[in-house]
Image (cartoon, rainbow, N blue to C red; front, side):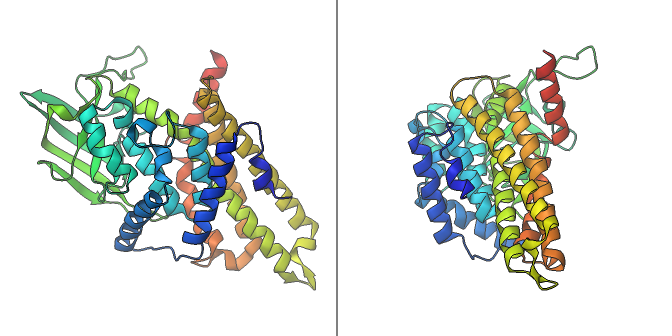
Length: 395
């Protein structure tokens, strides 16, 4: 049974989704299969730029834009974004990263940017000529967005930004950053937390005075990542995205589009691990028999396949609910929680099936083991997803 082909005939998809999945798979097989994965920072940066250009040339980046901005559909289509991310992740985690960050970094402009901003930057995003970044997290404000301390004060025709952002993907290689900062303090709630009101969004460019990439951050799965610093960084009023105080809504609307796709990327990693484990089990001989002939191996593969199917069903249900205007907050949280945690288990089991070979640098399962870990943290850690599900359940 080809579970991948079967999945495309689930009722969540239309013919356009099936065509897209086939097109991206064919492109990935031609352009990503067998390519070495860079590890040093300069090579990773260069490869990321190369991938953005290649994805644009193939027409894949248009699926992270709206038609008015040169995209594929009138509105963002979460199912298309998920299918692209799952397929790319299965072949190359950095290709998935390059696609996802172009969408995440540019969506605030598409959703709330001025006509001038959109016409200047979004065609360049789709053409792979400008790299985007989404700068929300801070050292003391990750999942708790309202705790951010970066400020933006109006001073005549300019805003003056002070503070820092960290764990910013594309930090150091982006051509523009969507930066969220407080233009007014949030109110204090009875429980001591701060409300998200008073947060605004701005477009910042690398050459802006007072803005620096203060630190490049190296992680277990290499990709461009950095800490940004703002010291009396002055930007024109025209680079306010939307209106003052609208930043939190813009950030949440952006994350609503892309959060489910994190689950899809996890499914892509898990599917590759399952394929690798299955093929290895068929070929590896132990005690005169193929590893796949042992019932313990068969049980492991069965659990891996079942977990992957469950995660994919939750993921594409959530994406379908989002695209058809249904409530999907709990569904998206369930999808991200199940897919990322499940993928970690599937990849760990795959590595176990490979034995000593599985921990050798350069092996596919070793790379997947490093790549999956961050997905359980970013865009809402697993613990946060549980809180969201419980909150929705108790409403």
